Length: 342
Image (cartoon, rainbow, N blue to C red; front, side, top):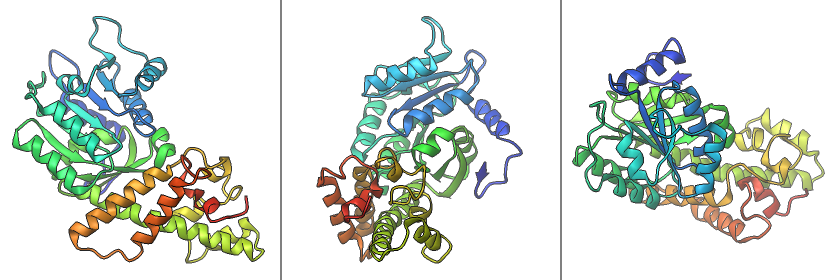
């Protein structure tokens, strides 16, 4: 695991020890909370539970009761009357009341705000460990909303709130190889890294609170554009009669190389494990890419940054979302939208 801006820990186990040092007490083992068991959150929570000591407690919640039930079936729940294992909470407030550390992975800014509003009002009781409660938000939202929630937590002295959006997709979430972009003070970084190391392999400290989500949106803005450009370039070359695998190989050994060409190539059959080779199923949905693009455009306007290609890219993703051939598919389906040969 790599932690940028910090000396590298000798082993992942040393970080786990740090996590337990921060959140244990004489009377009770460490308690953890996880809100949001979607396509990313579900495997992240599974990895967290798998790497926690069996005596620790994990409280989970999701509006989709099928998700919590499936989690319970795959991981197992605590026996009645016991403190250890996995507990299904009735709501996010119950999660936070019982946890020293709460992780949220939610789809939209409004979801994060509503969940945190319900958690903070009325005022939370102190943790049993006596330690300040830590909220780690791994959602991809806008910087303004993230700072608004952080201010609500900090101004009421109910804990510490950091942003830690991730990159690596569902595959990385399952494998525990996610990259986390962290916005937190340097004094919080050791504790935050100890938690995130159980769900990812790289932790990049981007600066103070809000900087992690800013870095994530800048990355995803570029991804939104490179995905379309890769689909256009592949379609162009194939229309000229070039072999798809030959063309992809040339691009990936030349200056056009990017993640969309090498890992998530939009042409079926070029990359065996890509969504394109499986009917554009799985992966990162068109609607999610459009959401991140919208967030990046809005944040850029607030910052006074000019994005010349943003509006046209937004139109393309909107058209893809409206197209029944592309809706609910991985965003590399841009190749199909362009009329590419499958």
